[in-house]
Image (tube, rainbow, N blue to C red; front, side, top):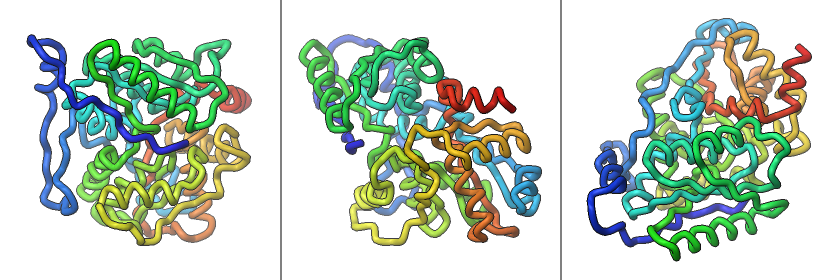
Length: 355
């Protein structure tokens, strides 16, 4: 999918004390001396931080690791509408949108997009309208993320069977239409990922430094690339292991471009990205993912989703078996959420029902 840049009007809403000004009061300016490339941008707090870092001793032993080697960063517990990693990014992109007077958030995604769900939730929290331009056609039954999109109050436009460029163009057209009718609208990028949004996972990396100073490796799924880019910006490329979920054509290029924009210089360091867990494609429920979902559920009581965290943990299993993740290492698995998507996957539901 093409990289979407935020599209916001520069004209703030004028006149009166209304919801827009109330929202501005909740914008907080944060800074940190360790951010050297550019001043820390503004964010709107949408969750309670830091998220927990939990030990997983039974799961670690099942993998062949030491009982205190594996920890789970619970970014599935961020709060809004089922939680997930996109909230960290939306704290920054929503702050920018509000600062420019936006009254509607527009974004794009697949039918079961976690990002779309959490954009809808962020809009509800902030008193903003939300328009989701989703690929595909209206389903026979509204399940998983789609059901929550409607419950939260987002409006959905089904784009049909279109490519990423057409989906982006349709979203931009909706922004222009909305702005021609009234207050400004903001286009939130695909997957919530742009250089600004990467600061959400710089924040997460800083939390991990405090929670587990001897961290050796953190495993994360790669979708739109912003989560890995932000973690690399904080922790360094040598400690971050990305596992491609198949959402973009070239995840390394995506992550590298985000890092280059974020640091304002060409990012040339090697990136650790696994490409072997996609299987036949983004929407396929693979055998390694089935193994990962079952192993994690039975040894930790934690549920992964079949697209992102399932693939990421399958990549961790493969790394342990290969020896690149080994006993004695302090390993963190980033649980980036996605539980509603589990209930939107008929393959996952059939698999779980079959034991």
